[in-house]
Image 1 (cartoon, rainbow, N blue to C red):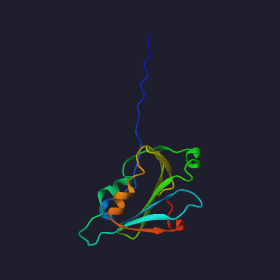
Image 2: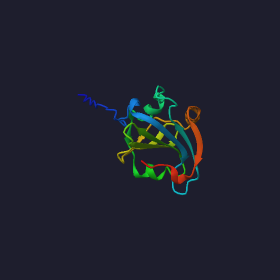
Image 3: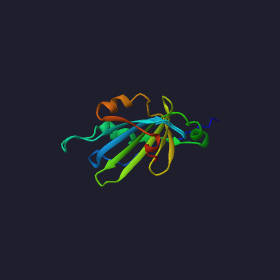
Image 4: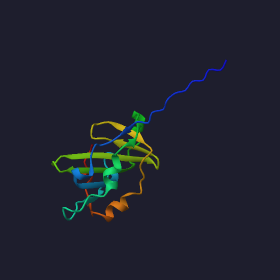
Length: 148
């Protein structure tokens, strides 16, 4: 007799819950994660006129992200790694901050506004150039980078 066991795999996803019409500006901070980090590069995207819209790609960065639980060792391994922190400013004046730290091209740690920390295969360290083409880029001290 052969016993066949089938398990269902559910794919967990996480989202910020932000929708494009709610966003009035986005700040993207490219920096090194950890204490004693150096200055960060910031791209600020604010539509020039009310008819302009924030690019969908920037809002969709943290929508329906496939995730798994991050371990303590995952968190310890991100010191000194490349990071992208995103601050969304909403119509209400509220801000939402999410950060992702790249361990490898398809191994990314995400820090969410609800204080949860997850791993995902989404994310690429070479996306900042696109953001800098649609916004104003400047350099800011590491202390100016918001934390989720």
